Amino acid sequence: MGETVKIGVWLTDKRSSGKIAFLQLRDGTGFFQGIIRKNDVSPETFDLAKHDLHQETSFYVTGEIAEDKRSKFGYEIHIQEIEVVGKSEDYPIGNKEHGIDFLLDNRHLWLRSRKPWALMRIRSRVKLATMEFFDKHGFTQFDAPELTGSAPEGTTELFETDYFDRSAYLSQSGQLYEEAGAMALGRVYSMGPTFRAEKSKTRRHLMEFWMIEPEMAWCHEEESEEIQEQYVAYLIQDLIDHCSRELEMVGRSVKSLKPFTELPYPRITYKKAIEMLQKGGIDVKYGDDFGSPEETYLADQFKKPVFIKNYPKEIKAFYMPSDPTDDRQVICADLLAPEGYGEIIGGSERSYDYEYITNKLEENGLSKEEYGWYDDLRKYGSVPHSGFGMGLERFLAWVTLQDHIRENIPFPRMLNRLNP
Ligand code: 4AD
Ligand code: MG
Picture 1 (cartoon, rainbow, N blue to C red):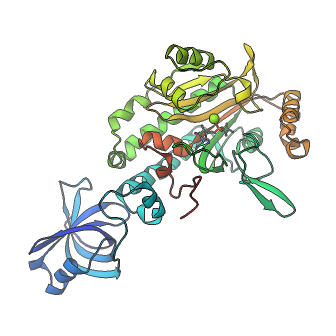
Picture 2 (picture 1 turned 90 degrees about the horizontal axis):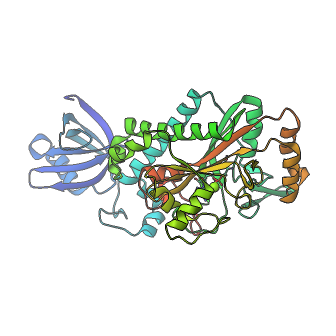
Picture 3 (picture 1 turned 45 degrees about the horizontal axis):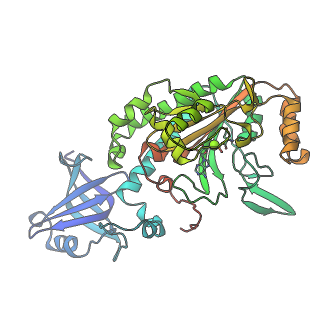
């Protein structure tokens, strides 16, 4: 404060009267106000500010920094000089309401607005906090390939691409590779894009989304669930500590997040969930998978994230071991977010039995040629292990209260959208 500085800025808005102009500015790190008084600057400079600066014009401002108690940013700049760098006329995004398709068509520009800015800052922070959390808990980062010959989460939702004389698939999940990593390094995790050619046009689905996938050797499902809830609570506390301004900008109060830092989260079985849904008048029966209405109803009963444990085999992946208390089921859990956001984490124990996995691969039409390596993990010093995958945009949509997860990734890939 009190210092004269030169900063590169863009104009977001302006207002002027005869002797003073208020310029709303952004420099990439924040949004703030510049004040320019006719009496303090040359007539050319005042004229330029009034007539030549339009929305998104880029320029250098020189001026003195002062406190601005009315703005959330806390500071403003009293401008002495302006040096235009890049013109901007007829910027398509105004300060009026625009339709979502228009905004997505202009995503490359829309990112400059306040809400996208705050959402991207929160996303970046969550990735940083993820690295911190797993580092503190003894995990090694272990990157899974994006081009694969395998399809761990079912063979119908694959993006296929030419790979010289054969086909490759864009990774649906890094899990199988994380399992190999866990046998080498104990506790590993990956964080990267994953792809699903799901023809579903819901507010929870993207074709390309990011997943965080921890995998732990010598670990059963119960311990994995403890790590999951600690991880989610850690991320939320970290956002409260570091992104309260951004949270406020997107309409999420810190106070409403606080209860989600309190552990443990409740746990119920799939069977219990079916009972609760039926009691609530929802038409489901044992064996059904849950969609958005079921997940919302269940999570509403707890007002906290809730684990749903041990789903029927038919609706889960091949690598999950049988539930010893009911062999129609497998040892797994999904973590459902409250407030209507549904599944944010899918996880399970992994069978470490060679014969079980060999049979499952066969049953699922997954060839020895492609999956022999996965079988090998059970052949040489197999140990109990568990892991999970958290959808980054699902988590973010929940904590930032977005109606659709498309706003939580810089450039969303959706059924009808590959551009920009
Ligand atoms: O439940 P899923 O399919 O689990 C797996 O892929 C496991 N292999 C993960 C593991 O154990 N390592 O996906 C995990 C999470 C979901 O809970 C959801 O949050 C997110 O990934 N997800 C999606 N997010 C956005 N768009 C989609 N189409 C998604 N599909 C899954
Ligand atoms: Mg799932």
